[in-house]
Length: 319
Ligand code: ADP
Image 1 (cartoon, protein in one colour):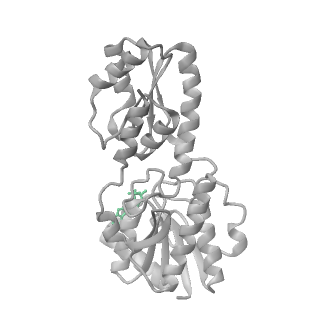
Image 2 (cartoon, protein in one colour; image 1 turned 90 degrees about the vertical axis):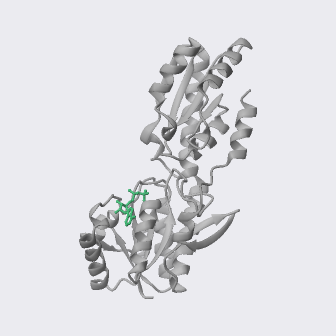
Image 3 (tube, protein in one colour; image 1 turned 30 degrees about the vertical axis):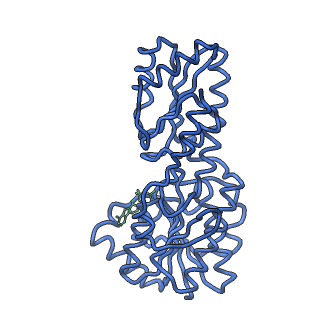
């Protein structure tokens, strides 16, 4: 292994820069030559490469987003597009590729491995919906951003004695909603992984009001139902002055937390170790606090890692 590439793909996540930095610096330490591919698989097809030295990844560890930029590429999924990607990698004599992204990006990494490219996936998504790891890069930052926003909304909710429905990101995974809801002391947390009982939520809100609660915070994962529709239903069944806030993309940006920087640095360095060992078609993960690796196929085949125990705790504590 002499020359490797690194790219970020799919949705961006805070901490991706720290992962790029770790790949480059650990790669240089191992005597490798490193190229960055700009704009994910789209840039791979366009032969958009940039050589990365130690200095090129300076001053990025604290920045959100990704210095390599990211993209989605439908063309990469086609036979022709995929063949073009293989041609580009062969022409540039790239033997290994670190792919930082979500599950779609990891599927692309697996497909490249099937065609002889050593690929190592690094899970980078705020949604934390990648089964092979307890935590993905960007999740902790997104949760903290959501908690800060909910705390602010709680102040105004208390002052005006209102109910607030706050929609958070996560696609079809309720991890952000659960952790942010638990940390912010939400009255209800709505996630796709748990059954939705609107009458129970309404009853709980009314009980809270009867015992003098000045506000109600309901955190809903975007995949569990639209915040606006839910707000209408709650307004009708409780009669409360209910407001809706969709946090949206503020959750995707911002300076990564220390935890995400450490996770990204550890994972990026481990990805280089795996390539140096000649491994491919694998992803890096964290299991019970330990850095680990497993085949992408078996990791993605695992079920959801949603923490039902934490959910039940949140329900008890919200009484
Ligand atoms: P994420 O990686 O954040 O989940 P996407 O699902 O949009 O984001 O995937 C990012 C890119 O990965 C896609 O635009 C596509 O180029 C590539 N990709 C996704 N799924 C596959 C697949 N099954 N096979 C090959 N490439 C894929």
